[in-house]
Structures are given as structure tokens and as C-alpha cells.
Length: 233
Image 1 (tube, rainbow, N blue to C red):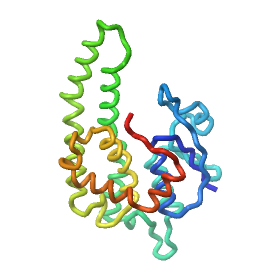
Image 2 (tube, one colour):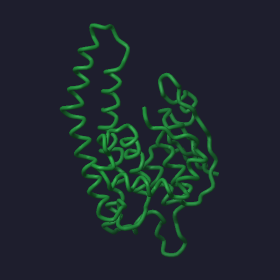
Image 3 (cartoon, helix red, strand yellow):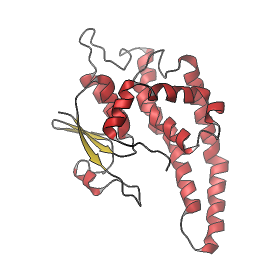
Image 4 (cartoon, rainbow, N blue to C red):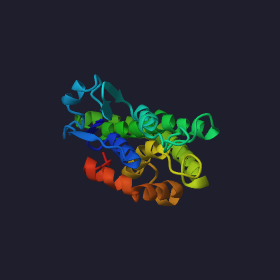
């Protein structure tokens, strides 16, 4: 049986959700972050050399990276048995399939980097340090955020909000694995306040999207399996 190596408060929650949407049975191996460093425990390195999550094992296969895992699950377990096409993905060779692939890569390649930079900049400003260094650190952090990170966040979330305004989903007018892949960045941004202070007012399509996916039965089942899911830090 497929096993998900699940780290609390991480991208692996998307993999649980994906499996629940597909109705695929799976085993769950839990790992907990270090409460001080928030890093994954060293036990994960026994599964994958990078010691990151998500990782799935399926027979002799060990696979990391959310996008690669989601594509694998669609190809391996999403077959509907009728026309050879997978569930949660448009037919191969169509413009919709290319757009689906685009959002799978955009989630980690474009949406997540400014969120991570924002988190790093905030931690620089609040990190313990000699008193004489604090003003310098805060100045560097503030300049980085105001001159680069915040404009990038506004650019990307405006773009994503516009994309969702058309149909409410990332590809066509139906829910797909692209929506699952994009969920983590949007949840993290809204939870941390990175999608502007008034996310619902400024990015209404994003907040509407999050409300709809959170109401899905499969999403709720994944939360029940995966445990508490906090993205505030």
C-alpha cells in the first residue's frame, strides 16, 4: 500500500487531500517538526536523502516534491477506466492540460519564493542579536520587504486572483489537481497576512476559493487524518 510520510504543518497535507479526492487507500507515517527550529526530524532522511516532506513510498518507488507526487498519483491512480484519461486532470494533448501543468509548477516555482522571502525577512527582524545590531537588521528587513518582497506578493496574488475570477478554478470550470497544488501557497499567504491585510477585500476570488476547497468532504477527511494544520509561522 502507498505510504505518505507526513510532516505536520507542511505541504504534505496536499498529498493527503489528493488521495482522499481519488479515494485511494494509504498508510500514514507521521513526523513532527522540532518545536524550536521548526525543521523536520532527522528520521525523514531515512526515507529520502533531503529529509523533506512530502515523500511517498509506493512499492519500490520513493518520490518527493509535491508537484511530482500529484502528477504520479493522477497517472497511477486517477485512471477512470473508460477513456484512458485521468481524474482531476484535463485530457492529455489539450490546452487545458498544458495550463494544468503550468499551475502545478507555478505553485512552487513562482508563488512560494516571495512567501519564503517574507518569512525570512520577518525572522531576521525579530531574531535574537546584540542590541547595537537590531536597528541594522530591522532596516535591512524592512527595506527588503518594502522594495522587493511586498511588491512581488502584490503582483503574484493579483495575478492569481484574476485567474480565479474567471471560473473559480485554476483550469476550466471544474475542480482539478491544480487547485490542490495551488492551495498551500494561498493558505499560507492568507494565514500569515501576506496577501494584504484585508485579503477578502483585496483578493475576493482567492478567499472565495479557499472557502470552497475547505468545505470539500475530501479536504476535511485529509485534515482528520493529518492532524492540526497551522500555517501562521
